[in-house]
Image 1: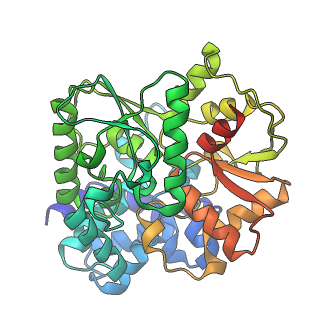
Image 2: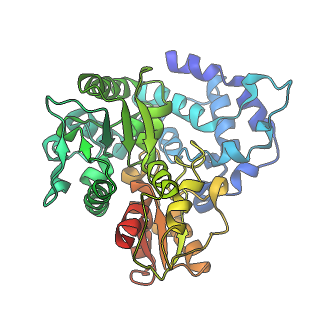
Length: 396
């Protein structure tokens, strides 16, 4: 099968990883930290995939459930000592666990082994073009009370790409209205694709549903071309990463930026000047797909540091060593771990330890997961989770 052939390309890397005895990948793996099973960390995963290639393990439901625990946060790839670059290193020794897992999930999916919640989410996307399964005609429901320009037959050189989470999740929807007002105030028209936009394809791609991912990307790419869009501002790191880096989007002249990059530029230019004080201790949680995948670390901090009265405090694990919230790879909707094992709980506890009043982030999935964790830990009112957009809006 095609996906098995693709996984075969990683054989040398799989063998090297599974044969290593270091185990650094277990150190801050968000799933291993809670579950404490070798099969959930990169070293164990590599051994399983290698055994699968050699015919010692047959695909089954249990295997599919184990492999769908991974959030593809890329911590293991960042931490792996084998990934240290040197002049004579063979290219096939790159231990890129997220890429391998995507290929293995594709193989399992093709053979019909998919966890129930994952299957439900993929069916939602196929039916309604969003993981939440909400009617596609309600994508713009968040815009009540706010005048937002959507593209129909008009053209625009610049538009905003609004993540499905920001469009359909009740907590995340609160951010988008704020975003529209903020960008209008600094002279950037808040133009969107409206109900014509489909899911970017991030979750489907991570879960191995390549055909559906390509369908979604083809539709969105046609919308970009139809409306002559040359620049996109993504509110979610997952959309930003997929539109910018994943092969499902054909090469085009569309420039992709995350909103924190845009706002940081405006701070530098003196066009974004917060005037109200926010006397809070704020810690920034680095989203995996903004940080480790795209190296965007300083821009969100620059935005927060521009707010008068705000004291930025760092958690012990920050920037490229940030601890994943647990919501990536579709797990924001498919997670089944008991509350005490959830990565988001551990992350909120870490924020409490540094005395933060507010956890700021720049990703809707992190916002949802961390906000839920404050509830499960009974910390509501003691520590608040906010999007950087919300804090900046309050400060203007």
